[in-house]
Length: 108
Length: 122
Image (tube, rainbow over all chains, first blue to last red; front, side):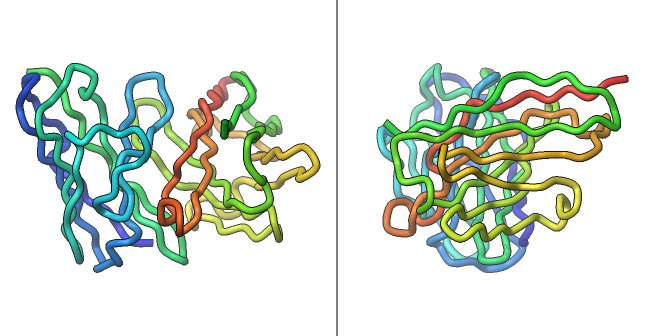
């Protein structure tokens, strides 16, 4: 398994602002196998982005993913009140899966 | 509708055994991997293992190998996670999640159960 390093650990923003979340992998991986999830308190995670940049069903287009190699980014173009949550990146490989430690997006 | 419904809260003592369940519906159970993910209180997600009901293939995270056992009953489309001897450090919420096919979402976890909270305390 690789190691996924997410930064920042916490970001404080206001509704309407842009959020840029980073996920760095310890090994270069295929873009195909990098995903992002959102988790709100008391809820299960929800798939947002798969294959680096493809939005899952029902995910608004203010969420976008990008990156390649070892550096990946989740961008929320304009934060809505319901977007304040914790975000995790996830990588799949034949030897197993790894999650990052998460980035909390909190209200400033 | 695809659903994963997990068993309820468990309160156990150290040394006790436990099996929690993840009942699936709305898709062909045998054809999709199921993963188990741990979330300790206030912490992030940790992948524990994935299981393929079609041929019972299991991949464990090295961190959890030998600590838990994964199984399933295909006749009732249900996956299980079990412990033979719980420790206080097993206190966490455990999620099951379906791994989608490469053609659908490139092996991401597209459907999640609601989580099972396990509390281990003397």
